[in-house]
Length: 342
Ligand SMILES: NC(=O)C1=CN([C@@H]2O[C@H](COP(=O)(O)OP(=O)(O)OC[C@H]3O[C@@H](n4cnc5c(N)ncnc54)[C@H](OP(=O)(O)O)[C@@H]3O)[C@@H](O)[C@H]2O)C=CC1
Ligand SMILES: O=C(CO)COP(=O)(O)O
Image (cartoon, rainbow, N blue to C red; front, top):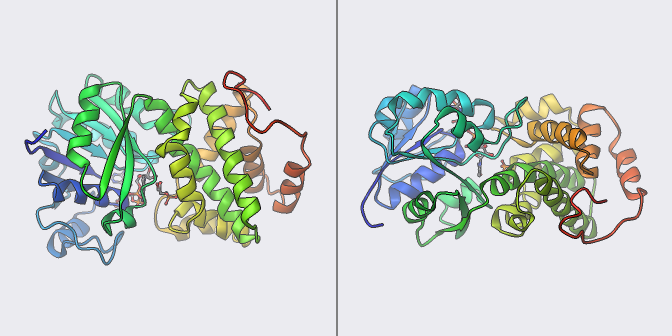
C-alpha cells in the first residue's frame, strides 16, 4: 500500500512512543495519544518523551496530544499500547470516536485479571465489528527508537489487517512478519514475561550459562504446552513472538520483567520492586493469572508454580530450585498432542 494513512497510537509510555515514531517516520499522519496533558505538551514541544525514552529525538511530524477525539477521529489504524490493567478502560473511551472501518491492533503483552481475557478478546468485546489484530515480538522500545534492526509479528485472521500493518510499520530497520494464530502470538508475548522474571532471579543468584540454557528451553516447553491446551498453535512458539521474545527478555536487563526478577533474587520485597520500577512489568500479574488457569486445567507448569510459590507463598528460592531439580525425571521433547504431558 502506498497511500498514507491516519494512524493513532494510544499510550505515551515507552512502547507506544517507539511504535508511533516508526509510523511517523514512514510518512503516515500519526498521532500519539497520552492521558497526561502536561507531558503531551512537553513531548510535542521537545520532540522527545523525556519521561519514558529520554535521549531519543522523535520524528518532527509526529503529533503528540492528550485530546483523544483529535487522535481517533477519522483514523484508519489504531494501535493500542496501554498496559493490560487499563486496556479495557481505554477501549471504552475510544469507541464513540472510531470509524466503522478502522483497524484496531493491540501491542500489549498481558492478561486481564479475573477473566483471563487476552487484549484482543477485549477488543472483540468492547469494539465489536471492528477489524482487529495484535503485534508481538522481540521488541525493546529503546532499541527500536535507536534504529536497531528489529522484527515483529502481526497476527490476525483478517488478511487486510495483516497487510495494512505490514505496509504501515515496515521500514529498513523494522520488519513485520505475518501469523494467523492471533491467540498463540498474544499468549507468547504475555507468557514470556513470567520466564523473564525467573531468568532475572537466576542471574541474581549467580546462575551460569548451563542453567540459563536449561531455563530458556524448559520455559519454551512450558509455554507451548500451556498454549496448546488454550487452543494456540505450539508451532507459533518457534517463531519471533515465541522463542524470539523469550530469548530477548530472558537475557537482558533492558527487560523490566527481568529486572524485577533480578531485584527479587537479590532479596528486595515484591511491592518495593514493583513500585520502584516506574513502568509496567506485566509478568507479575500474568503469573497469577496463568497459575490459576493452569491449576484449573491441570496443565503441568513447574516453573510457573515454583515462581508463584516464591512470590506469593514466601518460599525460599533455594528450596524451590532444589525441588524443581529433584522432581520426577521426564522427557526432553514432548510430542505435540501430549499437551498435558510431563
Ligand atoms: N516497552 C517495551 O519494550 C515493550 C512493551 N510492550 C507492551 O506494551 C504495553 C505498554 O508497555 P509500555 O509502553 O512499555 O509501558 P510503560 O510503563 O512504559 O507506559 C505505560 C503507558 O500507559 C499509560 N497508561 C496507563 N494506564 C492508562 C490509562 N488508564 N489511560 C491512559 N493511559 C494509561 C501510561 O500513562 P502515564 O504515563 O500517564 O502513567 C504510560 O504512558 C505493555 O503491555 C508491554 O508489555 C510490548 C513490546 C515492547
Ligand atoms: O516485551 C518486551 C520486549 O519484547 C519488553 O519486555 P519488558 O516488558 O520486560 O520490558
